[in-house]
Amino acid sequence: MSVTRSEVAKAYEKLQTQAKKKVESLKEKPLVTVGTATCGRASGALEIFNLFQEEIKKNGLDVNVMEVGCMGHCYAEPLVTIYKPGFPSLCYGSVDEGKAQRLINDYLINDDPCFEFAMAALEPNDFFPTFADYPRGVYEYKIVMELCGLINPEDIDHYIAHDGYAALVKVLNMDPDDVIEEIKNSKLRGRGGAGFPTGIKWELCRKAPGSPKYVICNADEGDPGAFMDRALLESNPHQMLEGLIIAAYAVGASQGYIYVRAEYPLAVTRLQTALDQARSKGLLGDSILGSDFSFDVKIFQGSGAFVCGEETALIASIEGKPGIPSHRPPYPATQGLHGKPTLINNVKTLSYVPHIIRKGAEWFKSIGTPESPGTAVFALAGKVKNTGLAEVPMGTTIRDLIFYVGDGIRDEKKFKAVQIGGPSGGCLPESALDLPIDFDSLQEAGAMMGSGGLVVLDEDDCMVEIARFFLDFTQKESCGKCTFCRLGTKQMLEILTDITKGKGNPEDIDLLWELAEDVKAGSLCGLGKTAPNPVLTTIRYFRDEYEAHVNEGRCPALMCKDLIMYYIIPEKCSKLCDVCIGSCPTEAIYTRPDMLKAIDQEKCVKCNSCLVACPPQYKAVIKISPPRPVEEGEMKQDE
Image (cartoon, rainbow, N blue to C red; front, top):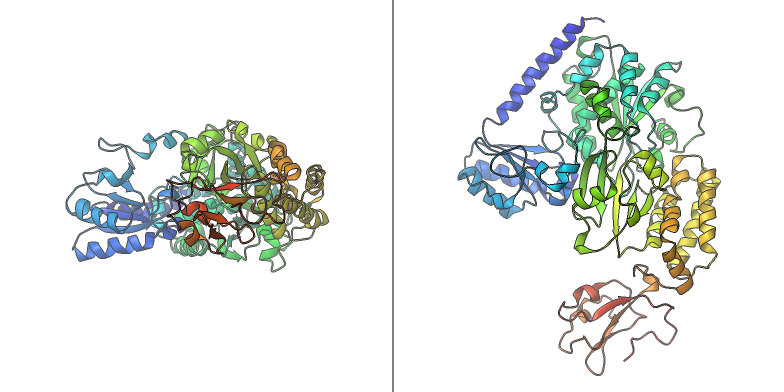
């Protein structure tokens, strides 16, 4: 090395000493943090942040105000945390302008913590319970999310002050083969979906002949309802970057890329800031921390093609070619970008690396299950009460994740299924709630871990329509290269569409299953091989719903518009109430001669407005799915 190992450590110690001093000074006086990741901004966090700044300045208060990322409690955004000497650090949820003014006047000025608005404290205290004291805290175990929502993602010193880049310093004092051996011993599996052992992937790339070598962070998160990678990049970009630099050192790469969706503008901005700051600190670029290891990173913005999440399609996209998967082998680890050995890892996979290097492989293996150690980060979406991000140990059951971490189903509805693993994942029924979450158990049940998307479905969701919805997405995102994927998914989608319209035939269910198996077997890449999963699992677990659609022409969940109708019960309708008439956008509701209301089914567009508008004391409007289509001449509700 160009400098001694101790000099590398000294260079880092100097950076960390300065960083800790800077960060500690923030809390010498009151500090207000506002979560301004995308979830927070969508709920008005920037307005709340500006309000705090303006009011603090207006009142002449000596208070710091700082932006942070996503803590995971997206259901409660905007989130505001107040650190005040002599008080516990309190987090406040759903902060609007009124709450913000109260916090400023009552707490910042007059020392009243406004416990009635607080969600939890951030550390143990004698005044207020912490997040760990609540049911979800028992099941969560934060590793890659540990600093999310607590540090300023646009200031590298905040990361360094919490031992950020210490793993890199340790690695620079190790032989690359020893680094790979540590990752292999940890049994870390790729969190991008396939679950391939990370250490083996690194080893293959290191041993592959040819140079230069490349490393790529795959941040092309395209699953509907998934936002884990986005939140990590917006909340703690340096964590992933440190993992990427360590990976480059281990495999012998000098150039890296971050392939990120252009639809993630905030993530792109914060990533660029992170790269610039890392270079300015000597943590990226030529002779990192004075060593003979040089490495730099470029950001490549993808154009939103879901298939580009597949490794070979991603590589083709960076090379300026159409994002179309190619045959494997050769695998990217031996022949990837520009024909050279290329290592590709997901955001979450790389984010675990610094923790494993710092704390050791045995520590990591002590969490989770023997074959799937560590944690899993999920984006809870759909009909769950507490939508947002959750990081739990592998092996946690689906029930615990949904009903304790997510606090159960909204509106006291009955749980029906969970769609896990993204659009190519499977739909698992209530009987699978006690299934442990790990790569192998989910695959056995017909689903997959995927990148961490989890959509909760309730009794109002039709499983045939859900299968059609997700297949419609994957069919549109197919690159079209494979005949099975291009035509097979199209044919399956047409059959599903017919079934949801009441035009299905009894043989369609078995035909769907046969087509799905053929598409899985004959497709080239992971998109085609997994696209049939929603169809296969819904037929496997909810065949009765398919049979009701096909044999009876009805939708049991009352979701498929072509198979439902809205009806006004005369006995419950009030002659004095015209609310439903005013709510109908197509004038389908009319007044009968007896002054009660009825619906012209020919004009009705099934928008649900009348059902929502009907006063609860009447509940006169109902939604039904007749066991047969409404015949010609029966288009008006009987008078």
